[in-house]
Length: 295
Image (tube, rainbow, N blue to C red; front, side):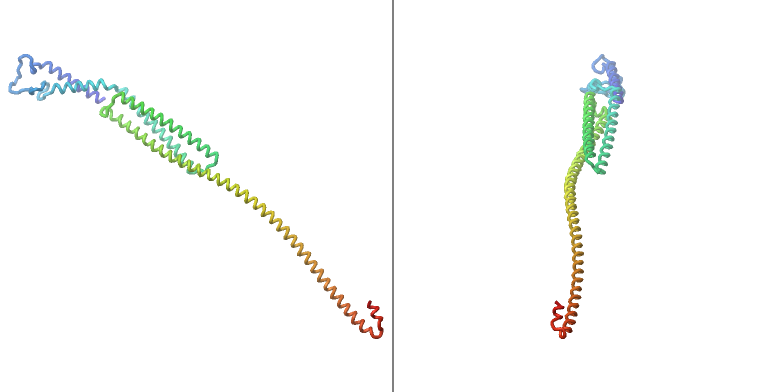
């Protein structure tokens, strides 16, 4: 608006200068009208001039060029105050939407990073996490496509409005802010890629853990088999020990029986010896009768 007012002021000054030119044609070869002071010349040699304000000399050619340039700019500038306000409102809405989307994406990514860092991931959680990551990637791509379309449309509107940096610095600053936001989103996209790489690493670790779990299950099965074999051997050892104990008991009973038999044999030997001694003492008077009795 300020530039339009300035342009209107320049046009009014130019029109006033043209009116003065029409009323003072005598300076440029009109009727025989001489200046009040013939010693002071208000003309420059070889330059078309006009005396409008005392003490000033205006070049008609420069003024004409300025008027033509101003008119050309006025005709070429297709922006009105209403359209300018609409563009600013649209840019503000785009910036607010961009901030909101960025905040939502940051919240989702922060939540996802927290979930990944705290994760004790089960297979079901793994599948849900992959589905959520795919949904987030789809949402991010759609939002980026919408932002690119809005920015392309905005740049097209700006190019059609033929806005120069001098005409609208605020609009260019807003576009620069949007480009900075796009660069920030690209940086976040790179961070998302790093996060996806980290998630892929976690998935690989999960797969390796699953393989280790399978190996552990096989080892546990083998350990169970070995424990069963050990238990069977232990039962066999216990039964063998019991049999050995029974054998020792039987041997002990046999030893006791043998000792008793030995004692009995000793008793019989002692008795036989005593009987032999008594028989020898009776042998002389009886002759051979003790032998028959002994037999």
